[in-house]
Image 1 (cartoon, rainbow, N blue to C red):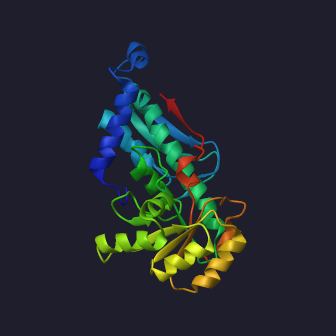
Image 2 (tube, rainbow, N blue to C red):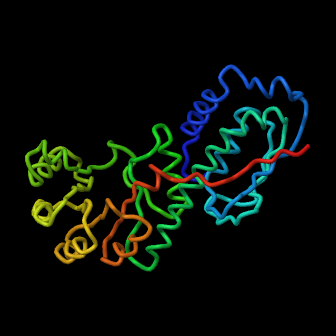
Length: 280
């Protein structure tokens, strides 16, 4: 699995299995003989972009290391409805115990990748780059941002620790855009870029005067973004965010904006429909 810290992945999967299994799988342990062996097929029940197959496999292998896996697609592939995504084989009891957690990861991450791919395709041919946000499921940010990359998008900052983004409440606390930028620049490493959120063209001018490297245009209309792009004229990178969806994202992209961040990629994706069918 590319760009994935194994220790973090192990912890996420362990937490999910502990939550679901608790003291044991009462149903499976009472019905299924421990030595019964079978194979399971993951079936795509709709068109999707696959993301999370290695996570699903690792989930099963955390339960039982002898479980085997065969991939018919890799993360990032477009999968058509009716296709077999991959197969797993091993003790039936262990496959059933891991089924729901593995599917939860696979369906959610593929849902994020599928949605991201739609946004990326919608802005194709423009300079705009689709970004995610920090609006992620607590504890799953690493996986969800991975799924965005699989779908063709790029990651915004991972947390509060790896980038400066001055938002409305920071500006209020500092007493204005210029002062907020000045304070940040006086404390932050010179190699870090400073991004500031603005809501109108007056604040945009203040951000430019204070030499912010990136300016986030918050909840602006397409016409306002066009005016901002003209006004900035390459003096800073521009990001548009808020009120942007699949139906209007291309309009925003055609303004010449550099980045478009979309919280919906991770805060409200629809899980795709994938099933696991066991056969003896």
